[in-house]
Length: 234
Length: 323
Image 1 (cartoon, rainbow over the protein chains, first blue to last red):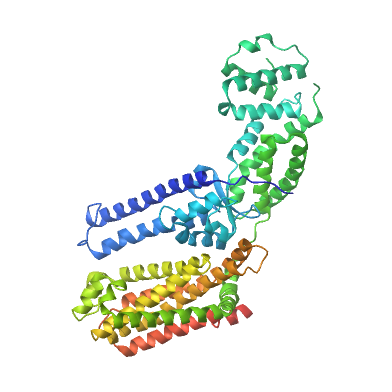
Image 2 (cartoon, rainbow over the protein chains, first blue to last red):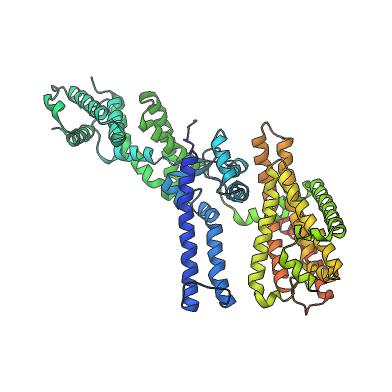
């Protein structure tokens, strides 16, 4: 069975990268300052500080900074904290979790993708390539796709209450979609859709349509729609 | 509007989908227990039927998209390859690395030739026009040599060996990976990296010879440099293969050809990286130590070469693979 996954564009990619960059920078700086403080009593080091103090403070900090991405991707199977927050993940071309080798190749190509500065090469290939991939993805056979959080929420909302079996499947699905996308829709449109769906629900129950529907406010319309979805009768 | 049977299907299955969505993060993380694996398989088959029904009953609905996403995630879990870490490692060192090394011999020869030519060119350039030394050496290096000493003399007084080693092997690994991945520009990036390194090496040797320090430089380089340069050249040979996969793709598309080639050559780094770490340790602990004479350096250099040969040809691992 073929299913389509939504490919993430340069915006989501950059958003995830910026979050990850801040996380790794903070982690590395925290280690550096902590190690320096434990050894010398101050949080900064200079050229005349003991070599062992410099080594203990700077080497792990550099390791954290440079190995964060590959290690996080390996540990979280194609995700990083930044990618998770941005709602994206790495998959192979079959939609599955990429292999360790693919993730390592993808990260090795960062050396080229980050050229000449600020991921110039990577950004250009992401903008101009058909599947929005950077060179590392091209070489490793990976893609960055949306994690499907909205979709998961759609199912979660549907599964929280017992559903109104009196409604036909299309009305049920539409009500669910409308509640899920309530904030994204224009006020007039969502009110109109909610009233229409509530009338259909009344019709399905074999009762006359509520005349007060046109006077209900947004909050009440949403509440009634949830009740109709769950089969709670007014 | 009369309630159809499809709505009861939705109502019946919704709870199951939600529970499945809740289980996915746990199933993704690690090994599945027998019960979880059976539950995943059962859910996978059920979900395939649900996706088909949803596509028919609710086309273009968020529920259908959600079910498809859920199905794709479950498909990835059900079809996940088993992990055999030790066996994979044995296979890597006994079979895959030697095979890739054999395949890359023509490219390796070409890279060595380019490196030798650019080294000779660098030598000739600085020998003929010594004032151009600024192109291949930093002002600090030039100042040291003009004062009759190598820039590496007394380096251990400034930086401890451990720190020095770490810095060196990190840099060498980055250079080798770069020499390889730069091949993605149809091999031109690799050509530049090798030509540049050769020019610098030749130029620096010519410059130190003018000041009678070439023997000292060779003594410094010998123990670690033979393997280090070989590894960088091998990384570059892998880069040439990458470029070749794009210029003359073996598969239907350049993308597929690049992917296949990258997956093949990436295994070489299983040997390259440990060897570069050893070179870094030698360069940090042995090479700058003026108290260590030629004989131990020669022994160490040759032992390192033997180790490299053993790793790349798989001689150390053949018996264990056969077992």
